[in-house]
Length: 287
Ligand SMILES: Nc1ncnc2c1ncn2[C@@H]1O[C@H](COP(=O)(O)OP(=O)(O)O)[C@@H](O)[C@H]1O
Ligand SMILES: [Mg+2]
Figure (cartoon, rainbow, N blue to C red):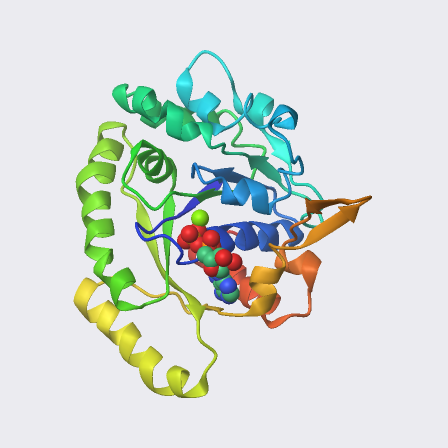
């Protein structure tokens, strides 16, 4: 079982889009995939079709979500919390959802050191059930980000390579070095392996690709010393449209989000995610 976290401390750079579609790509290659949403915004939970309800009283995520795995080492294990994505991908994949409640629970969870190692320990109990665990992390350095990066074997940093995203990179490096790796060492875990920056929301403008992108990539490698993946996720309408699909039932509109593969398996974006999946497979040495 290989665990990969998508993390950057900047929001809106494509972490959720990349994590759900990489998870979908690996799943449709028949790997057994578990996607974990650790962001209180619950965007990955929504994007995989788990939020079909329109009213609070129909909310079935509140009682069983990622926060329950973090609250206790004696109760709530992965098989009780996990669910399947809904009309999201073929085949569907397993999800541990997040809920806005994570904001309410944050102070309490932050107080206890053990919160940070429980997901790691509970995943060990199911390591024969999954080939890949993909974690969508929040854009912060809070307890949920700590859980994500303490649990993961590998880190992918999605970035649009623009100045504000670049300026966040030293913060990511410092967080990993000073908080994450120190904790991992005390648990007897190896340091987090940085697979690289995933250029994300990349403009398809040919002048940009010829002149600006190569300079941006060089600047990042030289200034921050972080590798850049060969794969890229280009900015394409299909990728945001597949998330925003809706279904009309009577006079109600329900969210009906799809992975890029279920939405349009021949799209350029689908091919980009297959390429990313193959690069990841090669870099984490799974065949
Ligand atoms: N490659 C892309 N092409 C088009 N839209 C994208 C792409 N990646 C992300 N988006 C859109 O940008 C917004 C932020 O992306 P998201 O994946 O939620 O970022 P993050 O998780 O880092 O906050 C969303 O509305 C998403 O649909
Ligand atoms: Mg997100």
